[in-house]
Image 1: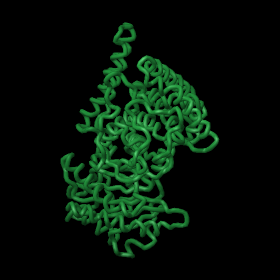
Image 2: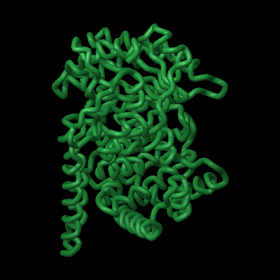
Image 3: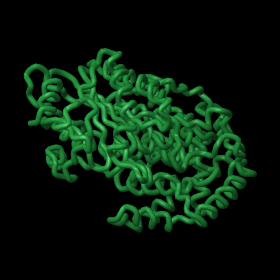
Image 4: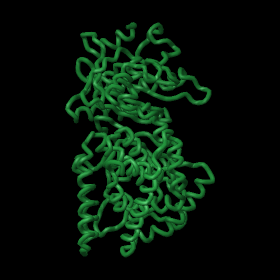
Length: 503
């Protein structure tokens, strides 16, 4: 153990000086994994999140004498240094308050700044560029009387400590990370059956629009045609039920088609093959149809067993087809993808999908409620029961062919949202602290929606001022963060009268 590791051990393990034992989320029997120093902390990070964070700031709470890991909070690193101070204050407050709400104020915090070098930039340069952000995070945590025991920058396969001034311990060129799969945490994760899903960038790429032309141009044209043909019918009292039934039948047929073509071993090849199985017209009609929230709620019933596997592939494929001016339309399939992932116990993938849904439309209430429920580690069985009850009620009503057949669906949709709000105890507040500037974002403010593509009732049109500065939700794990986010206004969430909507 080198000097810095001794220094870290004495802080993290209290006066005993023993190394840091960590029980990582996801281990069903809570095995204790001992981490000795900053190298093993950095190597353990992907296993605490379920993926390799890229372009991320991560805060991990430590509890007790031995520094047991508690709440975790991940957020994209703000591009502008002017945002670093307020973001640091908000992240520190979110993590501390979230831990307190769960019953235990943290005794310390570990900070990670993870970012790959830009072209022509070295990992050391990334570390120096982010040093002021690390200092602001340390200051913000200290202002809440919670010390930062360690702050690490991870870049280009190496790590640097912002807390250790000893060049013999922490060389200026950084310390190389152990090869993937060789750390003590990797061995413990393999024993416990924990799977790291790759990098955050790769996970997001499976859900972001495919913008390669001419396919993107053809898809956008198909979306124009489908919107002109379907939106006015979704808004019509007489025609909306027929559109809902047609949309569900189309989705069912695509699920069956995907079921006939099992996923390939190569993830990229599998996604490309799934895209080829769905025509531009089919994708467009289904994307537009899902903007109606009752249709979306019926689609959410495909949430268990093999049916869930096929549904997740379908929702990912549709999210990749929301190109051009239809970026906001991705909120529906992304939310469904997040719901299915959460329902099937894949919380990291659920958080990524729901975060992108809120990036596409920050006011999408269903995504906000699911994101909060997932972050608070609630049991999805409550929502599954609501959806099973909705399906059973609709089946009974259709068998009787009674006049009230449609009413069961409306009541079930309300029950879904009521159940989520009751479970979370709030109105779906989500922390949003950094502007979204990544690919696949909605059109900038002032860009007109294509002719013939009005949004269904209850869905906001092109943004006024806030739309041009999308804010991305923070991703707490095991704790919730409360930030200066708008709470749902109720727009688009009411079910009275059976109006179609996009929430």
